[in-house]
Image 1 (spheres, rainbow, N blue to C red):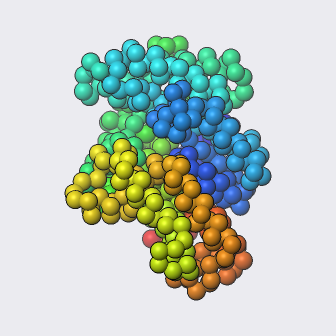
Image 2 (image 1 turned 180 degrees about the vertical axis):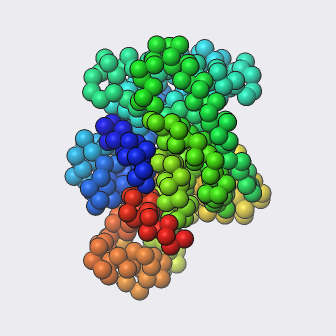
Length: 434
């Protein structure tokens, strides 16, 4: 965690530096993130959410220990030293148990936090902003902070028992909900400096009341809304002029930067401007799996062109048939008739398709697709047609013409935009061109 603490110090000293957090459990996304980290000689920050990974398995089926081992296994295969991996927990609190009474949800949250920290996660987002059964809506700020402090006590105790580096913390939450908006959006309200000040004040007081005043300097991030979001088919772009007061406010807090959620699909110039505006921690998730899906779809089209109609893996249809038969992960999000739902299942920026990649039938079809394209490499003409960026990388010798490498390059192109935005020199060049 010294890397994060030093990065915050550098940013507070005037350097336009930051870090991106990879919020995905897809093995190819994580592998691409590690390979790009190796390219740049940087550590990689990988985060799991409370719905995704928890003591009950979450929707990935992984506990915190299992997710850590999963990530470490990929690192060993890629050749990235384990000490170059920063593990974070996102929205840790009652999020997965909102339907239960508050005390029941908080007890389960304590188990969640204890397992995350014990199992090596050291960047901890304490988020108790959600109302549980019987709670008022919205939850008062003081109650949110008191619950966060309660979980921080558990985290500190777990760290002291486990040993190793002390955790760092992020507080606050963003609006709308994590993972992209459920509805069409036009514009978002930027968090006011007054609201940010209140969040800091109530958390600082709650930490002090819980005997955590010495821990406060390790609270490095505040989650606010800078005015960025995406819905199914459009992106709300960052407008620095709308966040000027918010950016100036955090300059008065010596140990804090902002953490920006839902930065997926922002332009490279917008990402650089976010870091310049003190949003020094940029979260990205669906934007990476969207890039993965784009590449998979292109590979499926290439395979069909090579094999002929009705032959090959039938990958796309397999995915869509599974989604039609098992609508749990998209039904609440996609409306309209069957044709519109099928369109959104494939192309929505909220990328609900990402929940289906581990499905056995989809994994089997993907394995057939990959095997077919490994047995007979795509001709350059089809790469140029369907994957022009990867075509250029293959022609330049930077990427092998293998399906797994082409997939990872699709994700890596997005990751490099974040790395450039978080690099002081590259970000300055980007800002000068916009």
